[in-house]
Length: 94
Image (cartoon, rainbow, N blue to C red; front, side, top):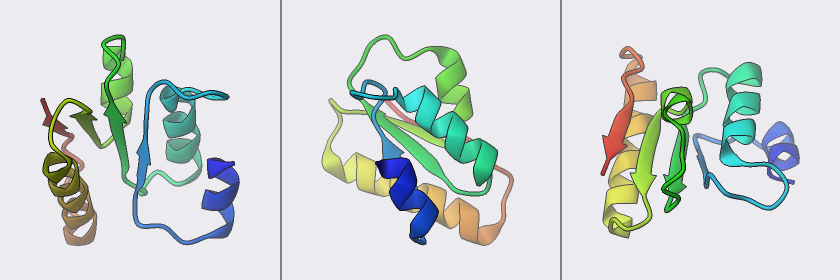
């Protein structure tokens, strides 16, 4: 459903979890990066089983154990990175 919403609505960034019911966050992020590579994707997960390849796929990663302020700051960071057209350096919040 999220991918359908994405295809029919303008968005600035996407936040996904790794463990989701129908598609995991890796599949969603991969689909987004294939269709809209410039769109920032933040993975916000509490899963301890997120593979390194997934962290390399997304623009940023936040652990759910961190504060919501950390998530907001991370989202602001990927948006600033996008608007300033700097090189895509992943941002990770532990």
